Image 1 (cartoon, rainbow, N blue to C red):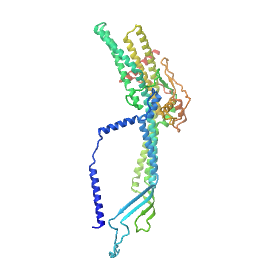
Image 2: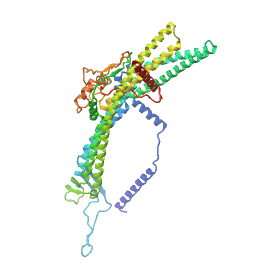
Image 3: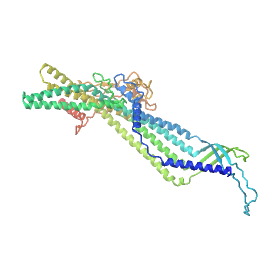
Image 4: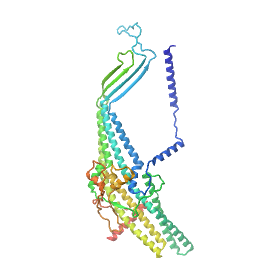
Length: 581
């Protein structure tokens, strides 16, 4: 057996062995679930990653500190920032698609026998009797370095890069919207958690007093020391107070956990809020005319900006469809090498040009262009419809804010009255002129009024945050002196608007709240916005005079404690108005 035949046999056996191994490995693939230990390890690693790199809560948390922690540590915001970074990274990759293709190739071939040939006469079909000849080695090494550039692909890649650039801007707008929604949510949740911190002890103490009084009343009834009917009425009053207090306690239980989730604090960890003794509840000043609010929303609303970019993406889709109808021109240049010893020149340059045109695309051109035109019209229709929705939302949220501010003023006055009644009842109880039942009842009413005060203020803060989000005002400037918690908190404090404290003893709240200009104005978040927006962010907002406060309609059902208290507050407010008339 010759050396050539032996080599060929070995090569065939090797290929057969490799093919058999590949076939067996493909048949052996089966689902492999994670083990319980692997799931546990992943859970521990993810739990550690959720809270890694965070500053310790070393002081009571103010509202500005809570907003700063949301902006820095909230996991939803982190995800949106990563989406934005991913979109920007895709933009960097798209730039390389605009460049020519530079490819390096290398190869090795081997034949078991030389590529020998004979010749045959074309006319007589007589085979030459001379010995066979060959002009190529059995072993061959080739390589080349080639540069190719398709002009049509360049045009399509250009518009694709433009679209991905717009998608990166869309990711930025989505991040802005997420930040605004988180700030709005933390405003609402912070004051609910503040209510829990302030009222939790009072509720527990009053419940304990009520339960003690209930036991005493039951004992009096058993021993028949009083009229049974009177004892039963006392017990009913106490049970109603306990039920109301327990409902308040349930309302307060989840507030702190919700705030902890927003600021990314481990569940179950105790922390204190920086709540002033007087409550620190002020009404943000707001005097921006409704026309300027509409203009700001049309320019800066994240949803509208996103839809504007979507319209531009649809236009670029049309451009791409038009380009696909044109012929493609490919330019190429390469440096070649072949180790064949029979070649006179083993190294050479090669230049070429090729034109390709898919004629089937011409047949589909009307449908392609019609579809692209329809996509543009759909994007325009969505943009116009969204602008109308945003304009309507500006009016709705401005009235919601005015109504929420009015409701807070009423709740604040009612709380002041209930507090003074509870103090008077306590003094009379100590003087022996009233009984314990009345004291518990008035304290329960005072606690409920204070809870309602916190709830209405939280709703007002939420409405204010929604108003900011609608007109596209960012809660903090895009550039801050420091990205530390203290630096972010300071920037947020400067960006917060001036406010007027609600006076619980005043006869009526002022119709217009004047804005006060702070000493330091932060940099406006968008350089292309109208000039007044920078002053708006730095100077704060004032309650609009055009939108008269509206009274919230009376709820048909009182499904929660908050709705029930709102209904009660509305009843008391209307009764007071009738008495005043």
